[in-house]
Amino acid sequence: MPRTCGGSGLIWTSRTDCRDTCFNDPWLRFTGQSPAGQLAAGWATGLHPLEPDHCRRTYDSHFDRQPPFRIAYRLRASNGEYPWIEDAGTPRFDCAGDFIGDIDFCQDISELRRVAGTANPPADSTPAARSQTIPWG
Image 1 (cartoon, rainbow, N blue to C red):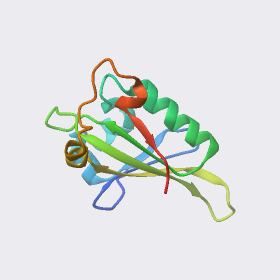
Image 2 (spheres, one colour):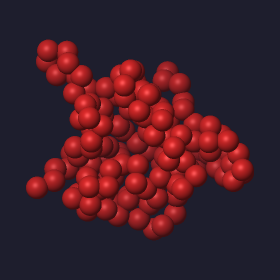
Image 3 (tube, one colour):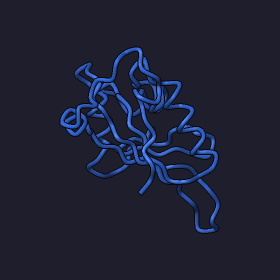
Image 4 (cartoon, helix red, strand yellow):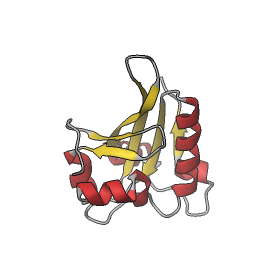
């Protein structure tokens, strides 16, 4: 049976093979997915059609090197819209110090981007302009 993890923000975890291990209830409500459906599809399945390659490269790069990171991207919500999400990924380690995967804490930043005037980059803009890595700080 698929697991969900706690918390009030949008949270998901992954193993060392990049496979997702759990999504919390707020994530599932936000995306409209069932636990089994989301685990089968993975976190990236709901990315805006213009963003998957850049997001995947950024995630894979940070996952392999294991530093914390932040990335902003548009994610399909249960209402069919694509709000902007900030995803803060943090590596997880076991008691022996071995890497066991990531935990990602996400929040809707659509309103912040709207106020800043960066909510809708042009369709012909570069992937970096559409989805951006945000330095950890």
